[in-house]
Image (cartoon, helix red, strand yellow):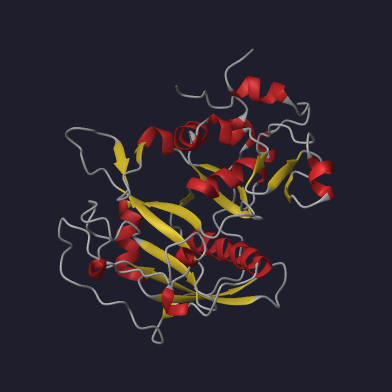
Length: 313
């Protein structure tokens, strides 16, 4: 069942400037990183030798590093700092170059709650259209990008934009190359997964865009992109974000206030890590949340917001 879009969304979300003039340098070709070998076209059967991007392991932690830059699992504080600046750098670079992108999956869910990365996330997910992915492969592949934080100029990072050689193959193949590109922090190997969406079945399913991990989107649910703020910088949001999130995670993901050892505080609008006394203090304080930039000032927090979201009067 499709959740109706919020009536206030169009009025509250306004278009933002195409560039903030912040410090994201023009990319230069990367000469220091050896690319992973590009084998022959993937066969039908999965074969690790055909995989382009490699991770040091397959669990929730080791599976979120690029093996070429992995030096060890970083502490939680370093991980949160890495992801915060990494998504800011990515979004600012794309905006500076006039390229279209939007956040997806758990990253979009984090925006839903408070415009921030979910504190238990180890990587981030963004999407681009097929034409944007083609441009990246032709003009930006294996470029490095220098980032200086606009809020703390002592924070300086370098990122590698690496496009999978199989990115132009818009079908799943053997499933070893469903990630089309990555934006990688070269200090530690943490990354943003970039996946392209293409209309691969125009005869059978016109207007349906598919990624190589078989997520399907009606183009009308994606466009026109809404403009919002994520981690303090402009971001594109799929038009029918409520439908997309509820179909991927079910509606409970938009209202459950305890997850992965964290509790949602309606007072601070933050996910609070549960430990000892904090568990007792925080239990019962959460309320269903609508993204801050969609909340009119006159709306009281509480279950009424979710009732309105679900179509109640």
